[in-house]
Length: 339
Image (cartoon, rainbow, N blue to C red; front, side, top):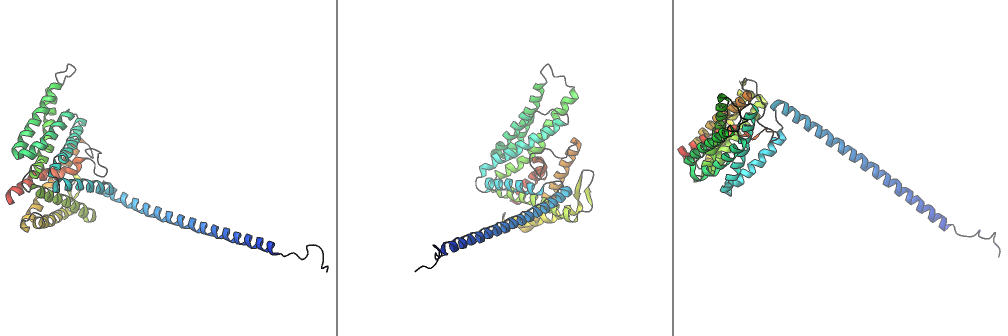
C-alpha cells in the first residue's frame, strides 16, 4: 500500500535528540558563564575588602609611626624573636646566654663606635668589638672580678691599638684629638661592655638566670607601659630638650607597669616577698628611664636620630638596650641584697 513520497514516514527522533542536546549544552554553557561571573564578582569583592582593610591598617600604622617614630609591627616582631632566644638561653641552656650576650654586646659596641667615628672620634672598631666580646665569657665564669679585669684589659688593648695606628708616617694627629679618641674608646667599653656585663655576671650566679629574666621582663614592661600611657594620655613633656617624645604621663604609666610586673615576678618567679618586687620594679624603672635619657643625650650630641638602622622599627641595638644597660648593675644589686 502506497502511503506517500519516499521517506515521508521516517521518524523525527534524531532531529529531536540533536535539538535536546544542543539545548542542554546551551543551558550548561549559560550556567557556566553565570557561575564564572559570580565567582569573578565574589573575587573582586573579596580583593576590594582586603585592599580596604590593608589601607586602613597602613593608615593606622602611619599614624602610630608619626606619633611614636617607629614601625610598631616590625618592632614587635623583632622583640618577640629576641625574647624567644633569650628564654631558651636562660631557661634551658644557660651557657647559650654567653654567645647571645656576646652577639648583642658586639653589635652594640660596633654601632656606638661607628657613630663616634662619624662625629670625628677615631675608635678602632675591629679591636673594640673583639675585646668587648671577649669580656663576656670572662664575666660569666669569673663574676665581678673577671668583669672588672676584662673591661680594664679591653680599655688597655683599644688604647694601645689606637696609639700604634699613630706610628704610621701618614698619621699626623694633634695630641688633643688623640686624647679624644682614647676617651671615646674608653667610653664605649664602660658604657656598653661594663654595664651589660652585670647581666652576664648575674646569669652565672646560682639561680641568677631567674633574676636576669625577671629584671629584663620588668624593664620591657616598664617600656611598654610608658609607650602605651604616653601614646594615650601624653600631654606634658618630661625632658623636651633631651627627648621630646617622653611625657610625665608616660613616666607614670611606666612606674605603674614596672611595680606591678616586679611584684608579680618576685612572688611567682623569684619566691621573694611581694614588696621586694615592688621596690625592684620601681628602681629598675627609674634607672631605665635615666638610661633612655642618657642615650637620647648621646644621640643629640652626635646629631643623629638613631644609632643605626640594624633593627627595623627599633633603630639600632643600642636604641633598644639603652634602658637595659644601666639597669643591669641595679638588678645585680637587688640580687645581692634580697637573694
